[in-house]
Image (tube, rainbow, N blue to C red; front, side):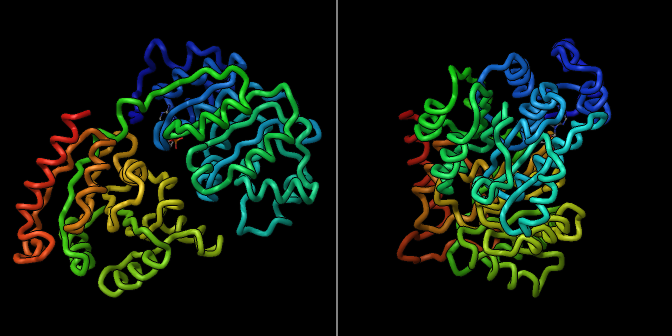
Amino acid sequence: MIRRIEEEAPNGFRSMDLSPTMLRALKQVRYFQPSPIQAEFIPKALDGLDVIGQAKTGTGKTAAFGIPILEMLEPRGRGPQAIILAPTRELTQQIVVELQKLAVGRDVVVCGTFGGEPIERQIRTLQRGVDIIVGTPGRVIDHIERRTLFLGEIVHVVLDEADRMLDIGFRPDIERILRKLPEPRQTLLLSATISADVRKLAHRYMYQPVEVNLSRDEPSVETIQQFCVTVEPDRKMDLLIHLLKRDRPRQCIVFTRTKRGADRLADRLRRTIPGVAAIHGDLPQTTRDRVMRGFRSGEVSILVATDVVGRGIDVENISHVINYDIPDDPENYVHRIGRTGRMGKDGIAYLFVCPDQGDPLTSIENLTNKLITPLQVAGFEVRRGSIMQPSARELYNNTDARRTAALAAR
Ligand code: AMP
């Protein structure tokens, strides 16, 4: 977690050989101290090395690659010198905003390009000349096919959230783009997890990469209080409304497994609670932008989201994350709850677990190496005499015993 520290420590940005322009920009955005990933990543990237950084969103990873790239840009030529590939439109937009903040005092144009927005507008921006292009792989391919993006001057490539891009199925697009890029170049790769697939990509397209790993021992964030509530499937909606009314979250993301589930849930919540919106990949870009603006401004206080869109959301004020549907992949749990507890603030995460979901719960706990505190909510006890589980307490006891054994066996 990044904490704002008002006085700069000795190993701060000043020891990194950054330009006065960059130091002024950092002062302006009030980054007084590099985050751990920045402290490790920036000097290596400034040396021109290919770097693999294992880091999650919320750790300052954008500035980790953004600062060295801005420092290494040459005066503008025919095309962009840096290309950043990211899995979602929202993340792309966040990267653009962060880079623009860090580029104050320089004549640097950063352009975001992603599906769902008219390509013509993006083409006009490209024609006016850009230094850094940030895009989703699909839209970048679109530009390559239309010959509206000149890649001949690219020197720096960033694959951001590489694991996520591969999960979504962007591998062929990413490889096609990488094969089009000139050499020699610098390739930087950021990923929350370094899976065998990510390694394969790195092995093929990076030159003797060095690795920076800061999330190995802390897959989840300490400032977040995590609770799991066992609930019958047909009581989940009532439990959600109960918790929202009881806790009155400052801002909350509710995660569902499917896009339709997100819509349905948001529709039902709206009947009782104000400030509810849904976001997922099937919505038109204009709607997604509007929803995100509403969430950032606080007008929307409860956002119902699916994993692909939700996990990249970087809004500082989120007090609660509710896992309405248990995630299919335990990694997603870590990404989901990481939306709260940002910048050292406290956060609360609830996980709804149905009586037959002990196994996915155990997988999450094995991954995070932490037992999630069971929470009994009066009126929502698991039905006595239920065929699956006789009582909530027994479920906890059983699951606890299994979980403890699983952890001990590690
Ligand atoms: P990221 O991991 O890039 O999504 O960054 C998470 C948040 O941390 C963003 O809101 C950044 O503006 C902020 N941030 C990044 N680096 C620093 C820093 N060194 N000091 C304070 N805030 C930072």
